[in-house]
Structure formats: structure tokens, C-alpha cells
Length: 117
Length: 179
Image 1: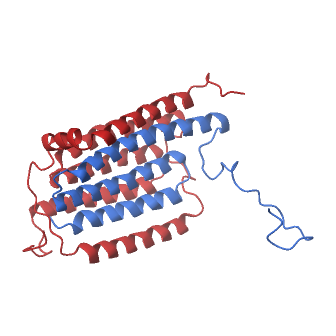
Image 2 (image 1 turned 180 degrees about the vertical axis):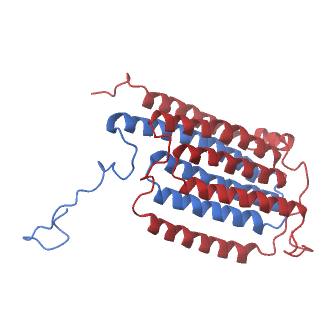
């Protein structure tokens, strides 16, 4: 097995995940895209473990650890999404702007750049 | 490891199988990030993870493949489906799943793919890994987890417990924070 094949597949999966995280608006779809990126990393780890014939099986054991961390992450993420849904009635990440910086209209009395501080 | 590697073309039997599974995985991943139906996205994710598990099998990582099927297909997708149902998402096609910066996102993703594929192809063009069946079976993996990687394993179990308790506390409504 040439190492190029799994590594290229994983690079493509990773960039698809990047697209999903940036383009999707529903928080659950964003979580799914994060899962895609984690899977791309897992494929990389397995391929390099097989290539290097690691006697400690570091790559595959780390893959198992990443799978466990992904399970914990998706559990916590869904709990947070549900808490947000309970209070805001929406899971639209574009509309959850409570933590965004307040963009004020530029103050004519001050020079630019100091009005927002 | 790179000596007497056969040429990139024609691909051998396992490589053909792996490439087909990889094409399925990439295609269904594209469907996950572009479909207009939330539930279909979760179901396409099942196909994508299944194809990846098949890829692990081809790469002789059997144990990882079965753990992938158990945890990802069995647990994570079910959790995501629960999330979709509990947030009362519409079942049919819904507009507005994509935000306005879709074209910027596509640009970033294509740039990422171009950079990564160029780098890995130039870096690993001659790397060849001969496959030995049984390399990633449960026995050698279990031996190395419980002999060498015991401390990270235990730390990870504590992390999992903390995440579980955190999820329970977050999703219960009758637990209030201190005033």
C-alpha cells in the first residue's frame, strides 16, 4: 500500500471538514464537520503507524484515544447546543451574537481606532 | 521501508479497494456538508464512517476498524440524531443551512486541500508500506495499551467521566449555578 493514497484521502476529508465548519449555519452540522476532520486525522495516524511499523503501536493507540475524545466532545457539544436551544430557541450560529464585539458607529469627535476601546 | 517499492501505477488489489472506499468516503463527506436535509446529513455520515472503517480494515488495522464502527456509527451518529430531534429541526429540506460566507469557506477549503495534497504528494510519493495482516489485531493493540500506554489510558477514562458529568449537569434544568 502506497502511503500516498490514505494520506491524500485524509487531506481531502480534512478540507471538506474545514468547508463544513466554515459554511454551515446549524450548530449540529458544524459538530458533524468537526467529526469529519477528526476522522481525517485518524486515517493519517493509522496510515503512518502501518508505514513505520511501530512496535509500540503508537499511531493506532492514539487513534483509539482520538475516537474516545471525539465521543466526549460530541456529548459535551450536544449538551451545550441543547442548553443554547433551551434559552434562545435557535441553534443558528450566525444569530448567536451575544459574545460578539459591539460595533459602534464611528465617533466623529475622536480619531479612528480609539472609539471602540 | 522505501526500498524496492512497486510503482504507483497500476495499483495493487488492496490499493484499488482502498481507493474505492476512499472515493465513497470523500463523496459522502461532500454530501454531508452540502445536503439540505439535516437528517440526511447524519445518515450520510454513517456511510462515510463505514467506508473509513473499511479503509482501516484494508490497512490491517482491524481493532481500530471495529472500534470505529462501534463508537462512531453506533454512538456518535445516534447522539447527533438525538440532537437533531431535540432541537426540533425540520424533517424535510430546509433552506438556510448554509451561511452567507459559503464562497469564502469554499475558497479556504480548496486552498487547504491544494496545499495539503501538494505537500503530502511531494513528501510521501515514494513511501511504501507493506501490509502484514494481524498487525493491528486486538491482541498486539491490547498488549501495547495495557503495557505502555496505561497512563494516558487512565487519564482518558477520567476525562470521559468528567465529560459525562459535565454533559449531565449542562443538560439538566434543575441544577442552578451559585448566585
